[in-house]
Image 1 (tube, rainbow, N blue to C red):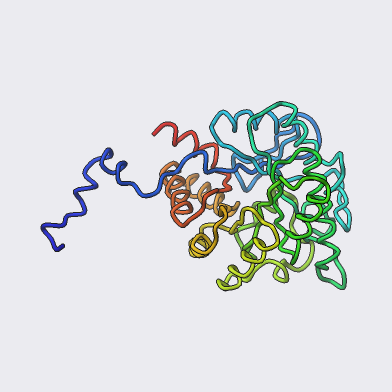
Image 2: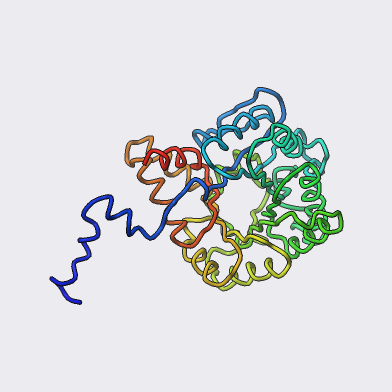
Length: 325
């Protein structure tokens, strides 16, 4: 219908009308909050490149989780910084590892949160890669066995969901099998299914102390130029037993999020990663951006693209702002 009969601005006249016809609604229930757990007691160390994000000891993690739950955020995801590292990341699956201790402490505190754990070896290996090194590269199959053991140790400690982030071939199947064999068939797997080899991970590697000591991760993380391969990875992981699939990073890959959402019938997550967070924080520190407005806009864009769940370091602030609206 041509102008003047059709005037789209009629439905933008005021906030009540805009809210009535708004297509995408953002909620604290959409968020998963990442936390970095480290050894010690009373430790809360701010990460230089991620203002407002901290490495925290188990007691501080529990305190943080209480606040997260009060804000209406339903889930956290734990990353561990171990007391020691070695060539095979053996601390990743230890019963008294930092992540395992944090899981048990959160559960003892009876905090109403879903506890998700990142399953990878990069934080635990002395070389910083996501698996066992053989002939100068990460060996897929020996790594998969270690990842399965790590996932099992997390679930035995009380984790509600495990999230393999390593991008090894076949790791979802191996984790599903070991959980089923140990009577944990009810525990879901959130797979980092389409994880790209991205330049946006830099601040995370400071936070998790996981920068590779040599080379890079191009032989196992995805090429940023590839779209069809992402769908192959996602569908493979679902076939192997993934209950939720993730695209990482989020903002440079909104097209991939939408394509995955259109193709699959499982929940889709997206990771608003450290570099995306730090860029906003840097611009805000220069007073170039309105933090609240920009953060809610970018999180809405991720949900509009098709994400059901958003892992974001902005979760606490965004939840507060949404409650104020």
